[in-house]
Image 1 (cartoon, helix red, strand yellow):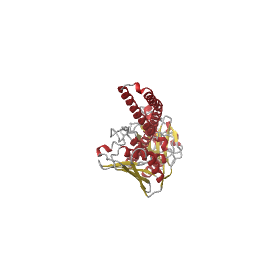
Image 2: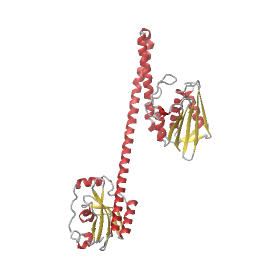
Image 3: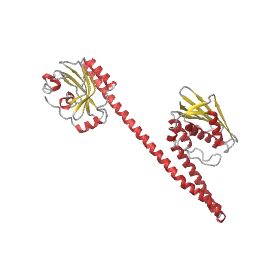
Length: 400
């Protein structure tokens, strides 16, 4: 018996093999189907998907064979991977000096005939073989060899797909962790900034009340500018806090939400802001959803409709309907609308389309970004319909 030589770049080959994370995993139907087909095509009792590591050959699929692995020094496949561009065919191992006294030949499973097609990775390393085995001498036709090679390519395609899926899952997990870290940072930073900012505002008011008479006009202008900047920064921080709390909101359990009560609660929040009429159009009495998330979405959208309305009275209609899988909402207003070339930017965080709202305040571009983030997290979608001068309608749906 002649033991197999180590392949060139064996260290790199083994690293490539380990990158697929398949060694010692449970059998999978896709690979078992391929070895079954290989045995049928080649008319052999045994077919294997064999992966060769540093000490053994391990069978990812073992049609017609109970063993799950054999020592590397006995492995026919360990010879096959030394010629990755060729199919290793041994017609009668008893007449081949490499194998004639091999324990796998003289004992079970009696490997007399062997044909193995190397499984070559995208990096060019042979990981193992798809092989067929018989207990008696045998010949394969060119059609059988070609079919076996095609099946080996399919095995490699499955391995590459599995690896890509695993890498994608890991990348998504890493991205989710980074997003969580970023949200935690935003929340902590915003929360820690809020307290000293409140102190600044209080000190300015205290200074104006106690020493305002002794400050000249230019000083008053500077103080008012500081107050305005503080209010603007406070709104920005409040927006960041709300945006970063989405992950906490989404963990809440679904509850039954009475729609009339929800509408009345929203009306109550805006009753002192401006003249506004908010109505509900729905045949539903209640929905089963994440109440806090729905409230945050509607509050942000209604607030946007009121702040940027150009009429004496803001007329806002909230519509709710359902189908088998989704709840559908719309929020329609009678405001100035928005041109189509700006509509795609409405949900971008920190994107501000209007310098001032009707109260003279500037936005921070966080509210509608929060809306989109919540809707997408609820496995839904959101869009707007509008023409300049003819109002605006937010349309969103969430999965039941």
